[in-house]
Structures are given as structure tokens and as C-alpha cells.
Length: 88
Image (cartoon, rainbow, N blue to C red; front, side, top):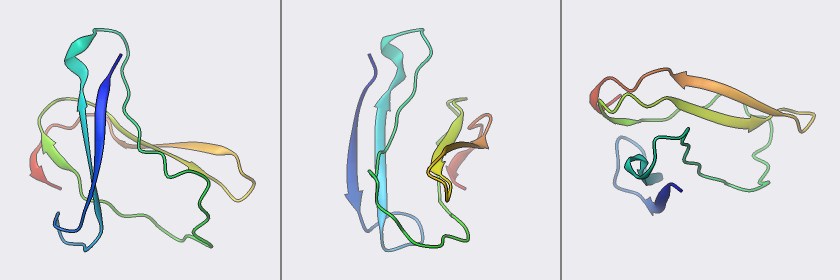
């Protein structure tokens, strides 16, 4: 089982609203995932999404699951390999 926690903050990167997701993938060799679930909040007619990710060269993938206008889940591959250090 992956252990993790979420911290809401306003002091990260270049925005005034941020979330820090902490996770520990060292507890198992099985396929692992960590999620932030914002529930079923509608944000209207979204035209784009932006995020800053702090990389530590861990090699993990970064994906997002969003709902389309019909309520169907869509998986977005944001990074196949977090191979950088610092904010990107």
C-alpha cells in the first residue's frame, strides 16, 4: 500500500494556490499510484490546465484523470519520466 498525504498551500512555484502531494513508493515493488481527488467539482468550460511539478529525478510517470463534457474519465499522460530536478 502506498502511503501519502496532501498539503494545501499558497507558497509554491508561481501561483497563489498550490497543493503538495507527498507519497512513498518504496513500500512495494507492485504498480503504484498516488492521486489527488478533487471530487465532482465542476469548474465550468475549462479551456486548459497548467501545473508546476517539482521533480527529483525519481523516474515516476505523471498522469492526470479528468472528466470530459459527457462525464467520461480521460487519462492524460503529462510526463513519461520525471527525469528533472526542481520546478518545471
